[in-house]
Length: 253
Length: 114
Ligand code: SF4
Ligand code: FES
Image (tube, rainbow over the protein chains, first blue to last red):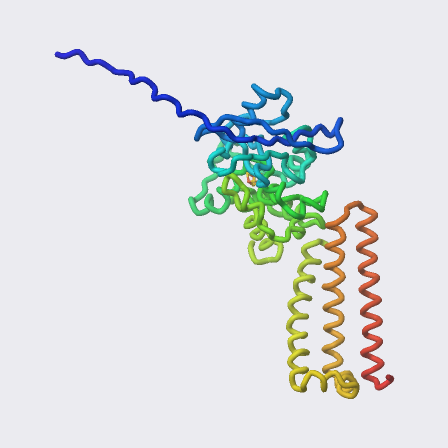
């Protein structure tokens, strides 16, 4: 019998890199009075993301660039920023899809800048906590003698898209009400309020509706819809907000 | 008052005002525009009691809707407990004044005291 040989083909050569200008907003609010842009020439391939390009700069050209990231796969919600003026996840945006020789990266709007591209999430996390983002009920699946709480596919369908939220804050950064109302609860938290209220296992609807039915709560949404336009996870906060209003106006129970 | 109750009143007054203003506009179409603005015809409207009643209701609906709208705009522009309290009471006061002054005009005119 002829001996079988496994041939490991040589890796095909990596195509030569092209270059793009990465314009990064640099700003340390503790030391400077206004942001400034610094340009870097960065090589890229067709798979290079904006985050890869920023990390290239950080490794090779300017170690001081402030950027936050973790998963590099659109799961942790850390790397939201304005890319060519539009809020997006840097790890989920490829250089080639931007179709531009200059890529400008800036911190997200409506968040306080910590340094360069890093913003503070305190307000978003506190509004998220405020709407009680967990199942509220007396009994538990782990109480002996109780059964798993079952749901039909239709019941899951009602809230499943909202549970994809990774708390990246892109929706809050484009919300016009967030820009002027420092007490507004925001699309991220409102979408999560809907996510739990629409969950048939949850019994906290009354509590949550009371929390969002405030002078800086759900009624301050003007339905601009930008939140849903920028969400990288396909969540539709604007729709969640309208559905929540249905509960408060008595159209839904 | 809960914000949802206020907003139900806000939407309700808007819908009712649109309906009544439509009736008002339709009445105006029974005459030509210049004629409908003549002194006698304006006074005649006020002295026709159901019409004067409708104008009074429109005045109340628009004042409630308008001043709540103003409150909403102002609390979205600036926050703070004392600011929001003064906006709320200021709007309620201004609304009451507009309704009182408008009602006085409607009442006096419909009584023929012009
Ligand atoms: S709703 Fe979308 S955009 Fe908003 S925080 Fe969640 S994942 Fe990000
Ligand atoms: S690094 Fe985690 S979402 Fe981009």
